[in-house]
Length: 261
Image 1 (cartoon, rainbow, N blue to C red):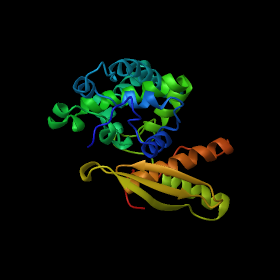
Image 2: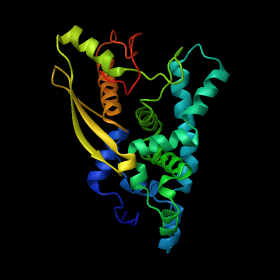
Image 3: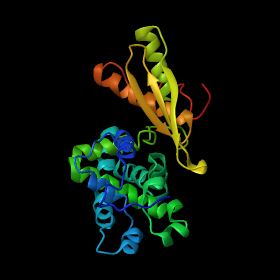
């Protein structure tokens, strides 16, 4: 992967725009995002006092923990402290954060020094979890706590636990959305694959969803089915905002993400 200087528009406009869409945040200071994607190994090899993302990583660790804690506190009003702590620990473990970083495509965007690159740093969970924390901090610095929480909510959209469900069960947003559109519009949503990017072993897929009323939503994931679930989740959130009687919680007979519909 070619290297870029974070001080010289390191992130191409089209790549930044795609990432901003996935984060639900448009940077007023794009240099913050470039800095978040700059690993210390790249800065050290560049010389000249090049900045890197370790300070943002430090801040992002705290911001991410607070955003996740706030969301879990809101979602589980009856949960005890120990239960909330266990859920948070699972969500923000290095492996879990690295998985979310890959889903965002950060493994293809992080700027590494040649030595770190040759040693497999682009696939290392510790590197990817750190860059995700730095990106969350960049959103926080650029847009404040509300923007950071919105981005974290989007990043973990497919991962939030549900009360009473097994650890391996994932919400089936597609089935729930279809139930709602059939009831309200007598028609089904339409999904179309939009793009795929990244290396073969870690591709990210984007899917466009069109509701019967014409509204469109995007979703991304490590497979087309996961991207469709992500798009359906976004559509359900919009419907919930428009109609307080529409619940985002999947139906009791929902199947796990990744099963054929």
